Structures are given as C-alpha cells and as structure tokens.
Image (cartoon, rainbow, N blue to C red):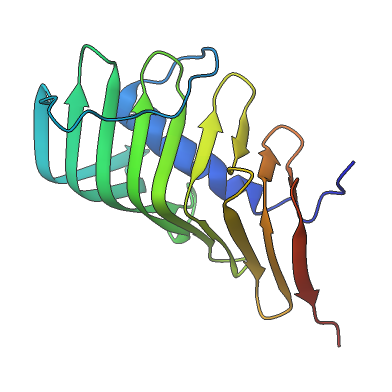
Length: 189
C-alpha cells in the first residue's frame, strides 16, 4: 500500500472542486467515463470572457476567469476553457491557492470534474504545486485520480520533487500517492 507523501497539498484539489460546485451546483453520483465532446454538437449557452467571484462576509474568497464556458443542458455538463482561479483565506482575504486548467468538464448529475489537456494547482503558503495533463475529481468517493499512463508532477519548495503516473488523492484521508511508478528527489539540509 502506498504511503502518503504529504497531507496539506490535497487541500488545493478541494479548492478546484469548490470551483466546480460554484459553477454547476454539484450533486453526488456514480462513476462516468471521460466525456467525449461531439464537435458538431452546439452548446445551449456560451459565455465569453467568463468570470466568477464568490464573496463571504464581505470578503472575496474565490475568483475564477475563463476564456469560454459552454453549457450543454441535455448532457448536463459545463465545459470551461482556459481557466484561471484563485482561492483566498476566509479571514485574511489573501490568496492561498491559485491554478490554471486548459479545459474542465463539470458533470451536473454526479458532481464529477474532469481536467483535460493541462492543469496546474499551486498552494502558496506551502510553496507546493501539482501539474499534469489529466485529473478527475470523483464526488461520490471524494477522490482525485490521474490516468495510469499520464504523469503528474508534485513539487514542494525546492526540497521535494515527485514525478509519477497513476496519481491518486483521497480528500478524506488528506493523502496522495502514485499507483504506477514514481520517482523523485528529497533534499535535506
């Protein structure tokens, strides 16, 4: 069984999930195969220069911007392209995490979120980042998975660097691991 590498960085993935929930009104459901978009299918609604800001107790706690967001009502998905987001502390209002994704698909029926093409998440106070080609959040199990063949890079400061495939994060356990090979470096002074 893989040993958890670091607990705090998984919090960042939860921030991404919150973004999906804000946009789509998430609900819990079963596993779904990765969404294949029919290029001939027309979305019901298209937003250009999409922006979202979440405010709690008078403070901005979340912002997101995207070049485009498309809603496909019959399929129950929202496709967001070229997205950037920032999560801020509820008390301080200072940025605590940021991220970028080329494409995100939100499944309204299950609450699942697929990040495709490229995704990077940064935890600012931990100087940590995670990046890869594909990641998928599964709402029913509160887990995040990378494809077995797609590598994910995990960095914490200048001291920790992991590169591996089969990324798996359990948000409830606050741990992550690699299921299909991992290599890395840990520098200690």
